[in-house]
Image (cartoon, rainbow, N blue to C red; front, side):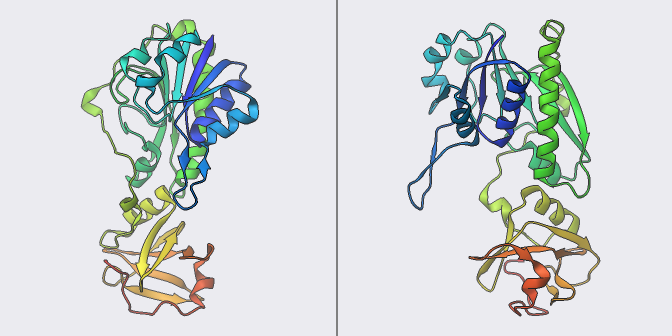
Length: 306
């Protein structure tokens, strides 16, 4: 079948590559418009656009695909549309173009974790499993009928990056199964159970700031989900990509240790976290123990706004 693929980020790019490696006939790709770097006005291509340029795949970028893309998409005469982390809601005029509809690769076990950041939210909420759902897109937000789902385990030390890799591989396997058995699946889809549905919004900038007025496990889940969380200390921003949960007694935000031997330990509402890697503002990432030798932190001090 002739496929038009809709996607923008790294997840989309991996899924697209899997379709091509599987021998599928992808005639064009639709991606979000280019972004502009606010510092130097440099145009930034999406990951999938860079891939398409390298592979000489036609790519379309519509500001609003449902408003601007209908005629161009009709001319492609595609049999089916496939979407994966595209970033725009498709209205009915786009959903009706391909005779076999629009198939979406969603990175959660629907109807749970509808929305644009399902991997991060699942980890933040301490879920033990997630997966890929192959679904038929309708006018709602991740509310269409389900063809099938496949699940994976979320381990305690998984991050959004590691889960992303697992789900990318699983997404490719699921699409392979779907197209290999298309005649079987095309009329076998079932509605989602709305009583079990949940929706989570897009991750915002304020979600990355750590609040130590919570338990250590919750904070740890946020750190591994977002991977670029930060706190403010003495007016300086410190980015934390990796930490561990340990026992500790102190007031929320209190610095319990800050030396080169034990590293940086910060008390939470209950328990504490040991910061394993730290990126001081304007510097590169390094082991927290190494940075503690700089004596920038003081024992018994508190993290700002904690």
